[in-house]
Image (spheres, rainbow, N blue to C red):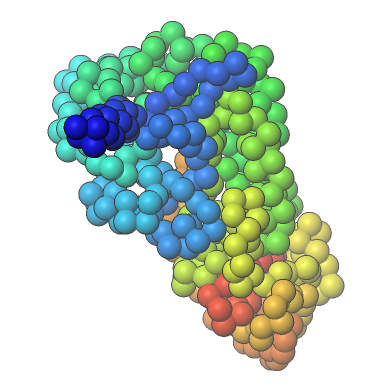
Amino acid sequence: MIKCIQILFLSLIYFQSFASKELDLGTYIVKTNTGYELIRNGENYFVKGAGGYQYLNQLKDIGGNSIRTWGVDNAKQILDDAHKLGITVCLGLWVGHERHGFNYDDEYAVEGQLESFKKIINEFKDHPALLMWAVGNEMDLFYKNFKVWNAVEDIAAMIKSVDKKHPIMTVTAGFDPAEAYLIKTSCPSIDILGINTYGGISALSKMIRQSCWDKPYMVTEWGPFGHWESSKTTWQASIELTSKEKAEARNNAYSHIINDSNLCLGSYCFLWGHKQEETPTWYGIFSKEGYATQSVDVLNGNWKNSNRNKAPVIDEILLNQKTRYESVKISKKDICELSTKIYDPEGDKLNYYFEVLPENYQKVEGGDFQKSLEKVNINIISNENGNLKFKAPLKRGAYRIFVYADDGQKNVATANFPFYVK
């Protein structure tokens, strides 16, 4: 009899425990004495995330726990792949941009957009990898029609009506206190403000506290200075940081994120992958071949500090003994010398690759698609240990010469030098 009572008692405890876990399933925001916390499946969940859906094993290995998408293309496969590794997904819903031609005065277009999301929400709301929803990305870039926020509210309210287990975020291009007030009053169903910021990250925490925004926020894109924020040559070419300088900039940027964990629920670094935007190397944390740059080591140091083979480090790049900030101009057919100082932390042998590209003059904004540029053939005179002698291109105009140094372990250092042929 006593044994039966004990078994019944233990069974009751197990059932209560199981029921409690079931009740905890999902993601919730909890207000604390000092700010906010994100709770997932009953535990605190600070987002150590990346924007993109490639190289998930590498993200997991360095302590990353979440990825962010901008739309729902291939969403099921992305969610399934992330779930296998215990990684969550902030699933983006691509909301139309005014600068792309979407008209928020067109009631049929707005209603059609809302209806298109209903099936998506019902399809993925119970996926175990789903962390939260992101309604739109940078719809405020060069916009004039504030009705977009009414549309965002309608989408968020629709989500809340069918999914009570996942918070909802909207994402802006930078932070503007006046816009924060507009979103706060127009979009009460938005739980988190996502902010894409690069050079402005050091002032972000103070600006939010001085504004009316009284909900949590996340840094949904961050990295080195954007090309629009960077120093320029006399012919207005943006000067790109080396992979080492980007890693140092990321380390500094992340300190601002982690130091505001009372209000900031985490972040998604940009870009966990590769893309052509201003240059082929400006934003990607990986090369087009999938090689990791030094920024991966910085994220590893902040998230997990696992024992990984580190990327090569570039200390210097000069053209004709001048720096990138000296607006170097040369005559066609001149013999030029590109010199670099690159080393590998583990002493791995480095393999060097150089290419010259014309300056990118594609007029696009906000990360819109850019075509990859065609490589310029140059006459190489000598190539030895990261130092290249070559003849300047024959055609007048602006160019960049790129150097890549990989260690044979799928890690790479990158840099480029803008120059002008007279």
